[in-house]
Length: 129
Image 1 (cartoon, rainbow, N blue to C red):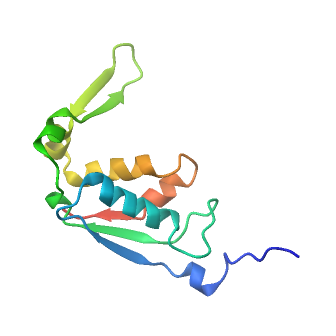
Image 2 (cartoon, one colour; image 1 turned 120 degrees about the vertical axis):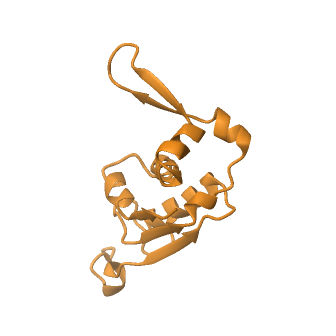
Image 3 (cartoon, rainbow, N blue to C red; image 1 turned 60 degrees about the horizontal axis):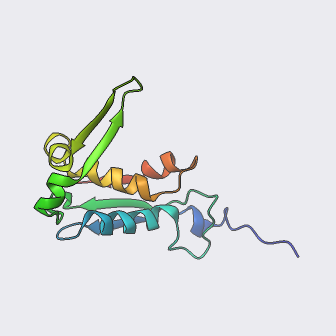
């Protein structure tokens, strides 16, 4: 017996919007919840090879619970491609320059599978300060 594919069912194509309140939560807790919804693991017809249709709105990102120690010690690395081109930014510098939205997007990106669907899933994240 062939396995039925539910990808064209009307319930599958309906876009869902999940709102996550980030006030008082840590970066990892919010990012984990967002990645869970973006991958579609909350649905019965979850399939790892499908992008899913859920949209995630994160509100109050500026009220994340981040300790002073983490603000000083957490570093983000970027590499220019040239010898000696490795540069680091501390979390407090990233928060100052780009805001909490960029920090959350970076955390969510790291929690999604490293495949062709990651870019498509990240487009469905909206973060509000």
